[in-house]
Image (cartoon, rainbow, N blue to C red; front, side):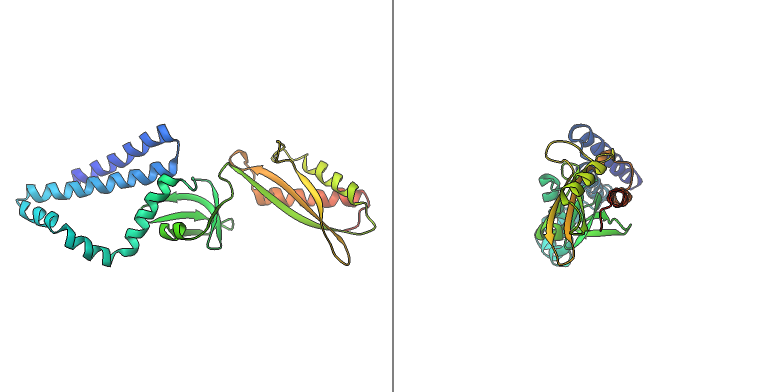
Length: 239
Protein backbone atom coordinates (compact mmCIF):
# COMPACT_ATOMS: atom_id res chain seq x y z
CA UNK A 1 0.00 0.00 0.00
CA UNK A 2 2.81 2.38 0.96
CA UNK A 3 4.56 1.67 -2.36
CA UNK A 4 1.51 2.65 -4.42
CA UNK A 5 0.95 5.77 -2.34
CA UNK A 6 4.56 6.79 -3.07
CA UNK A 7 4.13 5.90 -6.76
CA UNK A 8 0.94 7.97 -6.91
CA UNK A 9 2.79 10.97 -5.50
CA UNK A 10 5.63 10.43 -7.97
CA UNK A 11 3.14 10.21 -10.85
CA UNK A 12 1.51 13.48 -9.81
CA UNK A 13 4.83 15.32 -9.66
CA UNK A 14 6.10 13.83 -12.95
CA UNK A 15 2.94 14.57 -14.93
CA UNK A 16 2.73 18.09 -13.52
CA UNK A 17 6.37 18.75 -14.38
CA UNK A 18 5.99 17.47 -17.97
CA UNK A 19 2.84 19.50 -18.65
CA UNK A 20 4.42 22.65 -17.20
CA UNK A 21 7.41 22.14 -19.51
CA UNK A 22 5.37 21.92 -22.72
CA UNK A 23 2.09 23.72 -21.93
CA UNK A 24 3.34 26.37 -19.47
CA UNK A 25 0.00 26.22 -17.68
CA UNK A 26 0.17 25.59 -13.90
CA UNK A 27 -3.59 25.12 -13.65
CA UNK A 28 -3.77 22.27 -16.17
CA UNK A 29 -0.52 20.77 -14.85
CA UNK A 30 -1.90 20.65 -11.31
CA UNK A 31 -5.24 19.23 -12.48
CA UNK A 32 -3.83 16.36 -14.55
CA UNK A 33 -1.21 15.66 -11.91
CA UNK A 34 -4.02 14.91 -9.48
CA UNK A 35 -5.84 12.81 -12.10
CA UNK A 36 -2.73 10.65 -12.59
CA UNK A 37 -2.41 10.26 -8.82
CA UNK A 38 -5.96 8.93 -8.52
CA UNK A 39 -5.47 6.52 -11.44
CA UNK A 40 -2.29 5.04 -9.93
CA UNK A 41 -4.06 4.55 -6.58
CA UNK A 42 -6.98 2.75 -8.28
CA UNK A 43 -4.65 0.49 -10.25
CA UNK A 44 -2.71 -0.23 -7.09
CA UNK A 45 -5.91 -1.18 -5.28
CA UNK A 46 -6.82 -3.74 -7.97
CA UNK A 47 -3.30 -5.21 -7.94
CA UNK A 48 -3.39 -5.53 -4.15
CA UNK A 49 -6.63 -7.50 -4.39
CA UNK A 50 -4.79 -9.97 -6.65
CA UNK A 51 -1.75 -10.18 -4.39
CA UNK A 52 -3.93 -10.88 -1.37
CA UNK A 53 -5.68 -13.70 -3.22
CA UNK A 54 -8.80 -11.64 -3.68
CA UNK A 55 -8.70 -11.61 -7.47
CA UNK A 56 -12.28 -12.84 -7.62
CA UNK A 57 -13.37 -9.77 -5.70
CA UNK A 58 -11.66 -7.45 -8.15
CA UNK A 59 -13.20 -9.38 -11.08
CA UNK A 60 -16.63 -9.10 -9.52
CA UNK A 61 -16.03 -5.41 -8.95
CA UNK A 62 -15.15 -4.95 -12.61
CA UNK A 63 -17.99 -7.18 -13.80
CA UNK A 64 -20.44 -5.28 -11.66
CA UNK A 65 -19.13 -1.92 -12.79
CA UNK A 66 -22.43 -1.11 -14.46
CA UNK A 67 -24.43 -1.51 -11.26
CA UNK A 68 -21.70 0.11 -9.23
CA UNK A 69 -21.66 3.09 -11.59
CA UNK A 70 -25.38 3.60 -11.09
CA UNK A 71 -25.08 3.42 -7.30
CA UNK A 72 -22.08 5.72 -7.19
CA UNK A 73 -23.68 8.01 -9.72
CA UNK A 74 -26.70 8.49 -7.50
CA UNK A 75 -24.65 8.89 -4.35
CA UNK A 76 -21.94 11.12 -5.83
CA UNK A 77 -23.77 12.94 -8.60
CA UNK A 78 -22.46 16.37 -7.66
CA UNK A 79 -18.87 15.17 -7.34
CA UNK A 80 -19.12 13.50 -10.76
CA UNK A 81 -20.51 16.64 -12.37
CA UNK A 82 -17.78 18.76 -10.85
CA UNK A 83 -15.10 16.30 -11.97
CA UNK A 84 -16.21 16.30 -15.61
CA UNK A 85 -16.72 20.05 -15.51
CA UNK A 86 -13.12 20.29 -14.36
CA UNK A 87 -12.06 18.23 -17.37
CA UNK A 88 -14.01 20.52 -19.71
CA UNK A 89 -12.40 23.60 -18.20
CA UNK A 90 -8.93 22.04 -18.35
CA UNK A 91 -9.25 21.52 -22.10
CA UNK A 92 -11.27 24.67 -22.79
CA UNK A 93 -8.97 26.90 -20.70
CA UNK A 94 -11.42 29.69 -19.81
CA UNK A 95 -8.86 30.95 -17.28
CA UNK A 96 -5.39 30.35 -15.89
CA UNK A 97 -3.78 30.72 -12.48
CA UNK A 98 -3.46 34.42 -11.77
CA UNK A 99 -6.46 35.49 -13.88
CA UNK A 100 -9.12 37.71 -12.33
CA UNK A 101 -12.54 36.14 -12.91
CA UNK A 102 -16.13 36.84 -11.90
CA UNK A 103 -18.87 34.26 -11.55
CA UNK A 104 -22.14 34.31 -9.62
CA UNK A 105 -21.33 37.73 -8.22
CA UNK A 106 -17.93 36.67 -6.88
CA UNK A 107 -14.71 38.30 -8.11
CA UNK A 108 -11.22 37.05 -7.34
CA UNK A 109 -7.85 35.77 -8.53
CA UNK A 110 -7.65 32.10 -9.57
CA UNK A 111 -5.11 30.31 -7.39
CA UNK A 112 -5.81 26.60 -7.99
CA UNK A 113 -8.19 24.04 -9.52
CA UNK A 114 -8.79 20.52 -8.18
CA UNK A 115 -10.89 17.63 -9.47
CA UNK A 116 -13.92 19.11 -7.73
CA UNK A 117 -13.51 22.84 -7.26
CA UNK A 118 -11.71 26.03 -8.24
CA UNK A 119 -10.05 28.18 -5.59
CA UNK A 120 -10.16 31.96 -5.96
CA UNK A 121 -8.95 34.67 -3.58
CA UNK A 122 -11.03 37.84 -3.44
CA UNK A 123 -9.44 41.29 -3.26
CA UNK A 124 -10.40 41.58 0.41
CA UNK A 125 -8.49 38.38 1.24
CA UNK A 126 -11.32 35.82 1.33
CA UNK A 127 -10.71 32.28 0.02
CA UNK A 128 -13.66 31.10 -2.10
CA UNK A 129 -14.04 27.53 -3.38
CA UNK A 130 -16.37 27.35 -6.39
CA UNK A 131 -17.67 23.94 -7.57
CA UNK A 132 -16.46 23.36 -11.13
CA UNK A 133 -19.99 22.54 -12.26
CA UNK A 134 -21.21 25.99 -11.21
CA UNK A 135 -18.50 27.64 -13.31
CA UNK A 136 -19.56 25.68 -16.38
CA UNK A 137 -23.29 26.32 -15.96
CA UNK A 138 -23.11 30.02 -15.05
CA UNK A 139 -21.77 33.04 -16.93
CA UNK A 140 -18.06 33.56 -16.29
CA UNK A 141 -16.10 36.73 -16.97
CA UNK A 142 -12.32 36.65 -17.30
CA UNK A 143 -11.05 40.19 -16.81
CA UNK A 144 -7.37 39.42 -17.36
CA UNK A 145 -7.11 36.60 -19.90
CA UNK A 146 -4.34 38.63 -21.57
CA UNK A 147 -2.95 39.95 -18.28
CA UNK A 148 -4.42 43.45 -18.64
CA UNK A 149 -7.16 44.95 -16.49
CA UNK A 150 -8.87 48.30 -16.84
CA UNK A 151 -9.68 50.46 -13.82
CA UNK A 152 -11.83 53.55 -13.59
CA UNK A 153 -12.93 56.28 -11.22
CA UNK A 154 -15.20 59.31 -11.51
CA UNK A 155 -14.87 62.94 -10.46
CA UNK A 156 -17.54 65.63 -10.22
CA UNK A 157 -16.22 68.89 -11.72
CA UNK A 158 -17.79 72.28 -11.07
CA UNK A 159 -19.41 73.96 -14.12
CA UNK A 160 -17.14 76.99 -13.66
CA UNK A 161 -14.11 74.79 -14.42
CA UNK A 162 -12.73 74.17 -17.92
CA UNK A 163 -13.43 70.47 -18.69
CA UNK A 164 -10.87 70.32 -21.50
CA UNK A 165 -8.09 71.61 -19.28
CA UNK A 166 -9.16 69.31 -16.45
CA UNK A 167 -9.10 66.26 -18.72
CA UNK A 168 -5.61 67.13 -19.97
CA UNK A 169 -4.32 67.59 -16.42
CA UNK A 170 -5.82 64.26 -15.31
CA UNK A 171 -4.35 62.29 -18.23
CA UNK A 172 -0.92 63.92 -17.89
CA UNK A 173 -0.94 63.10 -14.18
CA UNK A 174 -1.76 59.42 -14.76
CA UNK A 175 1.13 59.20 -17.24
CA UNK A 176 3.54 59.84 -14.37
CA UNK A 177 2.75 56.41 -12.83
CA UNK A 178 5.05 53.79 -14.34
CA UNK A 179 2.65 50.94 -13.50
CA UNK A 180 0.04 52.37 -15.89
CA UNK A 181 0.06 50.90 -19.42
CA UNK A 182 0.75 53.35 -22.25
CA UNK A 183 0.36 51.15 -25.34
CA UNK A 184 -1.94 51.57 -28.34
CA UNK A 185 -5.57 50.89 -27.44
CA UNK A 186 -4.81 51.03 -23.72
CA UNK A 187 -3.78 54.64 -23.21
CA UNK A 188 -5.08 56.49 -20.12
CA UNK A 189 -8.12 58.56 -20.97
CA UNK A 190 -10.67 60.86 -19.35
CA UNK A 191 -13.98 62.17 -20.72
CA UNK A 192 -17.17 63.92 -19.68
CA UNK A 193 -19.60 61.08 -19.05
CA UNK A 194 -22.58 62.82 -17.49
CA UNK A 195 -24.08 66.20 -16.57
CA UNK A 196 -25.86 66.54 -13.25
CA UNK A 197 -27.54 69.54 -11.66
CA UNK A 198 -24.42 70.50 -9.73
CA UNK A 199 -21.42 69.12 -11.60
CA UNK A 200 -19.93 67.63 -14.75
CA UNK A 201 -19.02 63.98 -14.26
CA UNK A 202 -15.53 63.11 -15.50
CA UNK A 203 -14.83 59.37 -15.95
CA UNK A 204 -11.20 58.25 -15.95
CA UNK A 205 -9.90 54.97 -17.46
CA UNK A 206 -6.45 53.45 -17.20
CA UNK A 207 -4.96 49.96 -17.72
CA UNK A 208 -2.57 47.91 -15.60
CA UNK A 209 -0.62 44.81 -16.66
CA UNK A 210 -1.11 42.66 -13.56
CA UNK A 211 1.71 40.08 -14.07
CA UNK A 212 4.22 42.94 -14.25
CA UNK A 213 2.87 44.90 -11.30
CA UNK A 214 4.54 44.60 -7.92
CA UNK A 215 2.35 47.10 -6.04
CA UNK A 216 -1.23 46.62 -4.88
CA UNK A 217 -3.68 47.73 -7.58
CA UNK A 218 -5.92 49.16 -4.87
CA UNK A 219 -3.05 51.22 -3.45
CA UNK A 220 -2.15 52.31 -6.98
CA UNK A 221 -5.71 53.45 -7.65
CA UNK A 222 -5.74 55.40 -4.40
CA UNK A 223 -2.45 57.11 -5.30
CA UNK A 224 -3.75 58.05 -8.76
CA UNK A 225 -6.95 59.53 -7.33
CA UNK A 226 -5.06 61.51 -4.68
CA UNK A 227 -2.62 62.81 -7.30
CA UNK A 228 -5.54 63.78 -9.57
CA UNK A 229 -7.24 65.74 -6.78
CA UNK A 230 -4.01 67.59 -5.98
CA UNK A 231 -3.38 68.48 -9.62
CA UNK A 232 -6.91 69.81 -10.10
CA UNK A 233 -6.80 71.77 -6.85
CA UNK A 234 -3.46 73.32 -7.84
CA UNK A 235 -5.03 74.46 -11.12
CA UNK A 236 -7.92 76.04 -9.16
CA UNK A 237 -10.41 73.47 -10.46
CA UNK A 238 -13.44 73.11 -8.18
CA UNK A 239 -14.63 69.58 -7.40
